[in-house]
Length: 351
Image 1 (cartoon, rainbow, N blue to C red):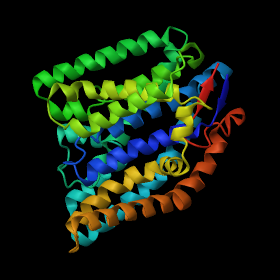
Image 2 (spheres, helix red, strand yellow):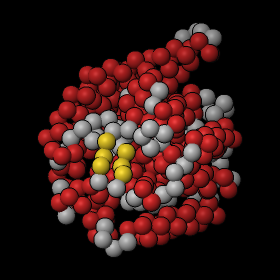
Image 3 (tube, one colour):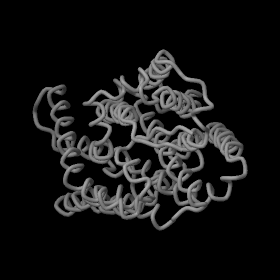
Image 4 (tube, rainbow, N blue to C red):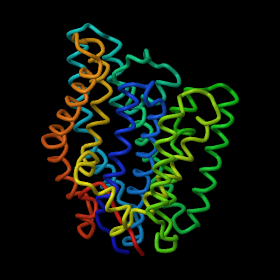
């Protein structure tokens, strides 16, 4: 198996974070921008399962210690920086609810907080966006062990059954009116993670080559859902995560190295935005909310552009001075033959 970095996947990540930021900045303009999280889920499941499958094929096992060490080094430093800043904000503003929210977010429980209300939650919860990080972390507590168990036992069938079961759960929750559980539940929302895992375990050489026209059509589907689908209990909310996940998977397949799709997505600025997308996601939500609290008198469009510029600056600084030093440490917990494979955030895999 040959594996190498594919910058086109960073370009796809740039599309995902653009959706999320547009959603956070003005939900009336881009009401379905929340699907950016589902794009992230597909990419995450695809990339991480590719690495784990490579390790399983090479060694017959998975190093749990190395896997979780790499996860911690990638995610924790920037999260702790944001948490420390928000703790300072809570201290100066005497906001005990914010302090509690930071604690919930820092231990990756925000998704269940949104469902069961451990601490006060609402549109002003500055850690509310960490629900997706919590969902991923909880999933990856289970997935390496599960993958090890099913790897030689038709994993595609197991994943297909899991996707079907999750969609059935979504319909049941919809009928029950359980909107929060439908949107945030580990057992109902991350269809994209499962689709990404399934794609990673499907040899791309066996799949038909998808043209740029197919990729552009898939992107059009993503933009249409982003523009038209709001966060209500309409049937579109039930199906959108699956539709978005399949469209994202099609783009990944079409973006094989050297293809027209890969060249389109590998545009330099988009690749850079993709590389700093974790920081953009992490800092954008609290910056937007604090910006509303401490708003200065300025035309809305100028103020919004200013906040987005601030978010980009903070995320770029975080990437350079907080995240990259720890990313270099990840090599100590990586198979030497795979170093460089995940130097960026994209992989191309061919059997």
